[in-house]
Length: 433
Ligand SMILES: Nc1ncnc2c1ncn2[C@@H]1O[C@H](COP(=O)(O)OP(=O)(O)OP(=O)(O)O)[C@@H](O)[C@H]1O
Ligand SMILES: [Mg+2]
Image (tube, rainbow, N blue to C red; front, top):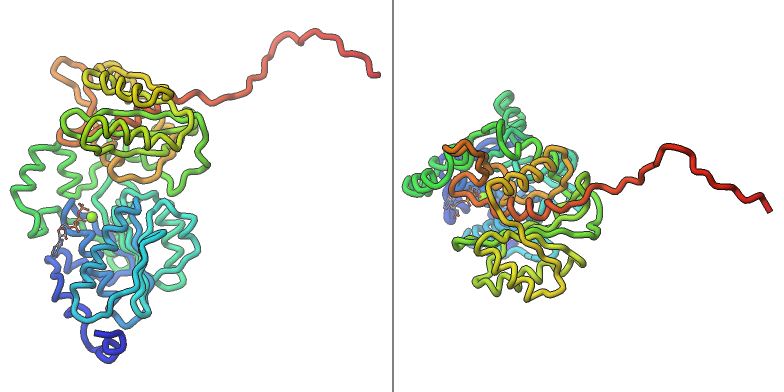
């Protein structure tokens, strides 16, 4: 159907059109029917949060009122997921002409009087000052509070627009506070919490498998959508949140420090790069290296480190890590790479060092849900022998945390010019000429 023909049919309810492609489950229906200006949806993994928001974006695109919709997520890849899902649904809906779509520098589309764009939460400066009628923040518990309060909410002020925050919980941070506002006042802020099992698409077998794989606490957070506090955590959510920034506060500067945690049992190798010092460090890179062979992983690490001249690397060299370190040295003869052997005691020191940086708010990092989830579920347990053991809550990875801890291990103390006090220095001042 052409745009002109569609305009002749304003009476077709967009919901009816959408139903041809997508039907909400009862929880999603409740969300779509809520009409408060701010909605907070705290749900377990796979509940269908992203899908529900993509469907709503399509409903808005099919409406008669012009809209300017913005999807924001901690990373551009995540924002792109929601955007792509909205595009797929739009294509499956009978009626509208194809939208004009562009993918760079960020995904955006135009359909008649409507616009939809997807941005990462890393670009606060670029977003500031824009206007929107609807903003959806996917994985909202993982973006910095200032992004929501200081950048996104003002974008809605002039349009009287709507804000939707969807996420799995992450401790008791700003997302929890928004959620509580909804509990206190359902008119301005609507909030709802639902476990993954509410979705008919999430099978009981899948949930049972997850329950046996991950810790009880991790299951309660990820699949029951509980706002569990972070008492006794190695990396308390409040400390990590204090370090989260929408944009790094300054340009990266050498010296750079990298950490590599080699994947062992088919899991990926992780890489982190930091710069700065123990009072003001920046996390520049945190990612998994998924290349299929060891040789390809070494090659990928080499490529990933290229933007950081003079970078020094600390690698896990425990067991299998040792030949990997040798392979890295052979492939990059000019790269200063050293090994770190993990023992219960050395890992404790390494992780304590990282925890201290978080506690002191000395590390700035941009939101990355994978790393943030690992930090959240990283546990200290006391083994039967009485020793403290550190690691991911069973089933969770801790490779990104270990890579970051390795990178942060060698961060220097800040340079402070010291004033020496003591006896005045005795030297003769030459007479004025
Ligand atoms: N109403 C629906 N009809 C058909 N498929 C759906 C529906 N809701 C969700 N899905 C599908 O279920 C899967 C999970 O949905 P979605 O990715 O939206 O969940 P999520 O809660 O955002 O998960 P995550 O926590 O992993 O981000 C996707 O494949 C999605 O397309
Ligand atoms: Mg999602």
